[in-house]
Length: 234
Length: 291
Image (cartoon, rainbow over all chains, first blue to last red; front, side, top):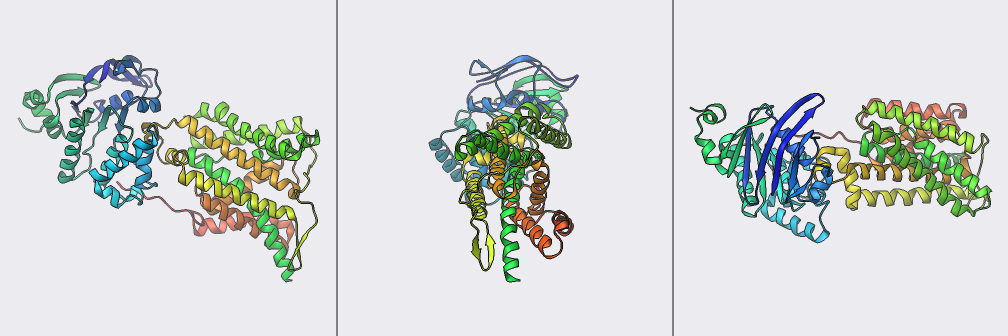
């Protein structure tokens, strides 16, 4: 279980996250929606440890993460699918996946590699090609699989539908629901609010670095303000 | 005439192998940090000078050589941990200037700790030249070539086949993504510096029986190694090897057939020509990003 309490973070002198708190339990999806620049990506980066925090606490399964290095957080079970996929474009697909298993034992890596190839056969077909040669959707699948190679208990996903065709978006979200069934705790950041809310158990709306509204996914789908601002209809 | 050509080829390949090793050091550090480390030649000098002085103190040459390589590796470790890692947020250009500073520092330290004279090491298999097609080749040339081949092979296996080697490559491509898969970037980059410095030190020791060494031998080695790496294509280990060999051969043939006074100029001229025609280097390739 991931829990964030009263978190603040700054870029230089400018505070960009204020008093952010959230909680996500195993087998649940928490959707974070909000406009560009609302602080969603910064929040995920702060949780994964690549963005420093100024106050507040982050705990994973009850253990504080504040002083734990980003790379060590992966070992503790926290994985992130970064915005823009960020695959290792000049390396093969298989190497990308193997690197995803950096913190795992060799036997786990082999099993997880098998699982990734079975779930997304296209990755197996192209396993020796450079990741940079994949289409956007395939790169997204690869980025998700790479994050799963570390056997996380919590996964942070930043805009997994960005730049994808509607058909691919369906595939990606089907994959996310599969992860939920496997018992992962998922934090899902999305511009595509309607799809995100439809699969989310809980949801929060971010505006200018704060969480301004929370509820279940269903509640927020019905919320008048959310409808107007983020779902594009009154 | 034929014997002359064989002679030039032999000395070109030998010197080229040394350049290739220095260029490999450049490649390894460039791949993990995008920094061209101009202290690379000084690692070679440090390895060679340490070996010379420890051997002169009565230690067997092999043990002295191991100490020399360790000294170079320590210098690599310190360069990263005591200097570069503190300036991590500087521009790449700033970091390159930092390595130039480190090179001058190493030269100064060597001048004080050792001395300002030229030194040599005994050739491993004597100095009785071997006759090949009327050309005379130093036995040490074969030692240099064999040593370089072993190092190149080991490095290729390390980067292509081991996870840690792939980690170095991953860091060079995307540091954020590397961190997010759990790679401790500082540890792996430190490792790249240590390996790179150790390779440099080994190159210096291998070359010393042929080329001699002195406190300031590193500067020209750095320049030649950098040129070789650029010639082959910065970032490609295979390019470093090919670039080094081509550079050595151009020097040897240019010096032998035209004028040895311009030996160094031929090498740099060759680079200008190659980079004008093929900016990515002989074997380098442009990586195209797909959006």
